Image (tube, rainbow over all chains, first blue to last red; front, side):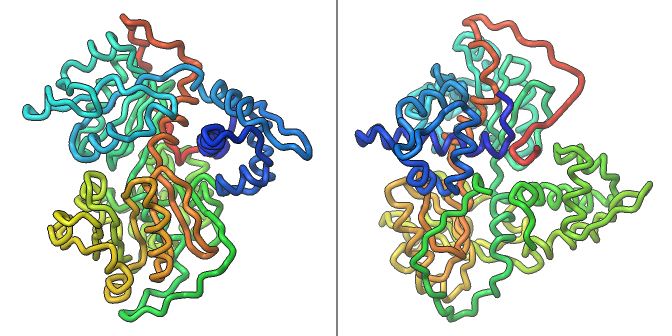
Length: 229
Length: 229
């Protein structure tokens, strides 16, 4: 179960692509085609999938259903994982309405906020509870993963409350680095960080002039995403 | 300029931590303290910073201003980079109001949408333009990086329009893998992917029972974030 972080970061893309193929009635896929869909090199894909115990057959490729099942087990998605969101503002409510939550293996079981007008309203199909109720709601509903969509100054306090209530996985959208005990895992999404990484990769290009001349678009398509190396 | 992707992914954290220290009037920092603030090991931090040409002094640490400046040059943040957002819905408007845009080195110069009530309204201090105007607005304002905050089915079309208009960096929040020409860089933020990575790291824990017993909280604090290895 101890795959390196970059490998783990690529696995969701493989799972999502395989399940998309299955929904289209496609039952086998070559490593090259799957790699192309996921924006990685096929050698990287084959190494990653062998890491999780999903093997292809030379000349045939991967069995989509078996490979997806193997990935789900490896990723702890062979049972529905219960998630909650703290912060029912624009970001939190947009995340709550994300249609892919259920298909990716999750159930939104709780939403929390502190603003009086919001508490009690329905967000993502769930009535918003006050943050003070997090410990009991987390216990009642078996909350496992929590999305933190609150302003920076409040994020650490929310994380502390969640950890004390037994939550072991946090997805942090606030622009602060969270302090958590060992055994608690944090994924951090920060707009500034993502933009700064993009700034680096586009740094060589000169600043566009007020009247820009579009660069020629090459026929070759290459997807460079955070997960690829 | 060719640092591996995991290194590049950690640099924004270092820059943000150094600038935070400077705002507090702190002018030098040890590698251990800086590493602690960023949630990485100090050996990793020292290797990463030497990669960008920022060197510490044994027993003293890093000069915050010099190291931050070196990072800004390496990351193409030594000049303000002009960004735009497509999609002025809940996600796009939340991103537009993100207070850290300017301090992290960016200026929001354009917001686009297609919904009639939204076009013309002010989001993030910028009047929303119709998506059809992207090519001319991109040229007029020297747009460099574009945030895509539209539903999945529309994301590729928006990416194509942006690339044709000369944009070379895309931050994609839609749940699709974008196809772009070589030379165009995409950072992808996908809720399902982030949750699935978290699901993997918390897979070993049994599903919480309806009445959960909180796990003991250890005094040691370790931050595990996507950037750490």
